[in-house]
Each structure stands twice: as C-alpha cells, then as structure tokens.
Length: 183
Length: 183
Image 1 (cartoon, each protein chain N blue to C red):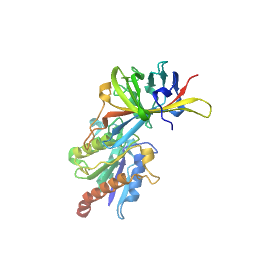
Image 2 (image 1 turned 90 degrees about the vertical axis):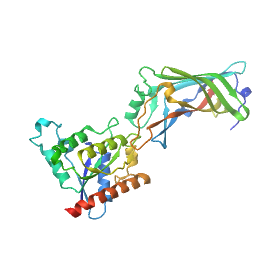
Image 3 (image 1 turned 180 degrees about the vertical axis):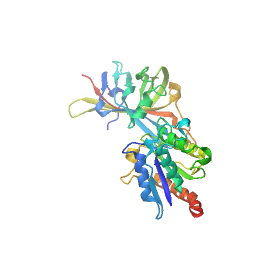
Image 4 (image 1 turned 120 degrees about the vertical axis):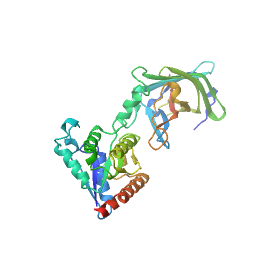
C-alpha cells in the first residue's frame, strides 16, 4: 500500500466508508483475557483545508455497541458505564494532525465521553490516496490510543473472588477507517 | 458413590444442566451422578410453613441425605446467585440441627453467557454452602460465553476449563471417600 505524505491528500472532505471501517475498543477482563467490542453506528470525516492542514472529527452512537451478551449490552448502556440515555454520543475533534515520514500519523484531539472531555493523542498510520475499482479516491487511517476509563466517568468494577478486578481501567480505543474523497 | 447434581437454572436448555449431564459421563466407574429435578417446585421459603415440609423440599433433603456429595452448577443472574437456588438452599438449611448439608462434601461449578463465567455466583454459592455447614471444595471454574464454550457432550471445549473441572471433581471425590467408607 502506498505511503501518504501530508501533501498527497488533496483539499476537501474525506468521509468514512462504513462498510470497510471499524471503530471499537479493547480492555482486559478477568485479569488475563482481552475483551473487544465495536460500535456499529458512527460517522466522521477527514477535512483537508486549502492550506493542506488536515482535521479529523467523528462521533459514535453509544447504543450501537456490539456485544454477544444482551445483559452485558444493557449494563454497558446503564449509568455504571456509558449512561447512554443521558449521553447518547461519544465524540472526537482533532486539534492537531501530524503526518510524518513513512505515513506515521499522530492526532491530538478532544475526546468527549459522557460529560467528560480530555485531550488525547492517538497514533497510527495513514496510507494512500489510492483509486479503487469504482474510481473513488481513498485513504486508509489506522489510529489507536489508550485512555483511563475512570477519567470519563466509567468507574464500575468488581473484585473477583480469587483476586484482581473484573475489568481493567486502561481501555484501548481503535479506529480503522477507510475514507473516500467527496466529489 | 452417589453425587447429587443441582442445576441452579430451571431453563429447559440450561447450559448448567447440560454441564452437569456432561460431568455425569466424566465420573469414574462406580460413581453416579443423579440430577435433582424439582428445584422449580420449591415454594418461597417461609419460616411459618416450616412445620409442614413442602414435598419438593422433602425430596431435596432426602436426595442430599442420600448422596455422598453435592455438585452445584450455577448460572449468574445480575452478578449473583439465582433466586431459586438460594431459596432451595435456605429451605434445606433449616432446621439448623437437622440440615443434610452439615459436613456434606460439596463443589460448585458454573457457566454463564456473560464474559465472567458466573464467578460471583459460584463464590456466593460456596459461601452459602459453607455457612450451612457443608465441606466445600475451594475452587472455581469460570465458563464464560457458555453457548460457545460447551461441546455437544456438555463439557467445556477449552482444555484449561476441562482440567479445572476434572481437578474439582477429583477433590470432591476425595472429600466424599471417607464418608462412603464410614457408611
């Protein structure tokens, strides 16, 4: 796959192709296992100004969280976790996007979960642009960052009978985005 | 030797009942597992009605008294022991001087559809059994995501869970052996 430089990505709006993208999280549970989940309903865009400066924005609808156990889905939407009735969306807005040598990508931004907003830096890669078989111009963005969920008001935990806690506090946020340039 | 299996779930296709049936096939020659099937017929515990023992309670007391050991398989409801199971154990704990659980070897296993494998329900069931006076194997077997974790034979597909199960059964049989000799 081709490696992007900041100059390669032309001015305009690049929107998320949701069929080929993924937005989710991973967290240790039961001390040793890793639990992964995703959100099905989200949107966002990469916007490149005429000056070449990119910005990235997006949101996730919390109720679209995908887990296999309906009881867990209910608990995740409850006040113990996301409290989706009061806070239906998670949002992100970049404050600085740096495309570095070799397609390395760093994005500073404000992440809002519930009524908490904090600055985060997500790291990953950007690749493309590449023309797909339908003639659309696409770039790929992979980003991840680790947050302490307690800083966002997601404080539930429970001691395990044999030691340790049910869920780790560090949560990895993962986004694999295929972005298509809007005409 | 006879082991009484008590499933904490009344559901027809209960994972925990399947697990107990699987255990029945795993036991060494000369050890039988009998499933108690009247849990749903046990009325809510009421001290006012203790003098007229309900038939299902009498059946459970007799089954425990006639067994060399008790094996409970419990699901987890809202991070705790199912009400029907706790209610049944409350009944057989009375009167305190005559409970058939006094000194009875017991072990607890459990499967749940959640990510945590009924660890809290198992821990609380062990606590309840110990409080009543049973000799309880101090082991837990978390079997999470039970719909995928159990094979057609009702036994865990995961090797670690299978080993834990076998170790728990071995310990339970060792606890029960002196009783059989004494009888």
